[in-house]
Length: 346
Ligand code: GLV
Ligand code: MG
Image 1 (tube, rainbow, N blue to C red):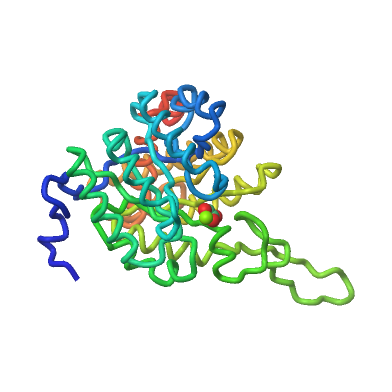
Image 2: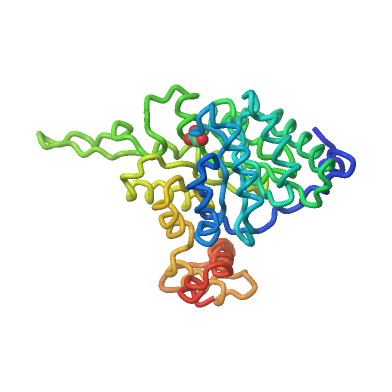
């Protein structure tokens, strides 16, 4: 284990000093763009005003014979646009692929000054983060960058889930993690072909009562992993995210999956289709009624101690902290979204 002093030192001479606290930014949806398709790149100027994060995807879903074009397309879209408050991320190819090294070697010198986060797929343990951490420091130093590029791990292998706590604590460069339900299902040998969401056969059967039909209650396949990821992330000050929801024809199920993740602590999800942008915006912006109630708690307990009753419900130091989580998030949303700022009255 590194000594505390060494943990926050740059890993290469001339590399930027690592963040002590990750920058505070609103990241309700990470919108995936396939950068090898010119028509998709042409939508980026418009997307910048609609989403919180634009991500150029270089990994899965990009055909092997388009990998080089996707990389070049990402560099082009990064150069062609000013992203302002909107995050610019890329999902690079995985570490054992033939493309990863060139992804890093070409992207960091070309547009590293604009890049906020690198999403690293199929992370299995701390060794993956340490390797990318060191390589990024070397490339940042060589490119003369002044701001560190952060790492976001996809939790999508059985080994990664087993090692999630060490992954979260691996480096001050860690931004957060996303659940990758498709790869994770394959890695674990789960018997589903879906990308996220529930499965009708993963259910609890109600007790038999007479001869009537027995009720079936579908369960959340991802509950355990989301819980484990949220604890690993929040204990290290990182941000947890739900990843992809593949059934674009079922916005209700997408909303429900996103909402479960939100309630459990996640701060955003991936949007793979334009319709999922608004779903994520709705779900990951706190509900105005909840914000109003939380604001009432904070106002009733200005120093955050003691006990009061509000609308028949007991409030104390712990509920004050719960309320603060909601109000702080609402303030962050309001700082970007004038419409919601008015609704929240913030
Ligand atoms: C995402 O990459 C997934 O595998 O679900
Ligand atoms: Mg995956």
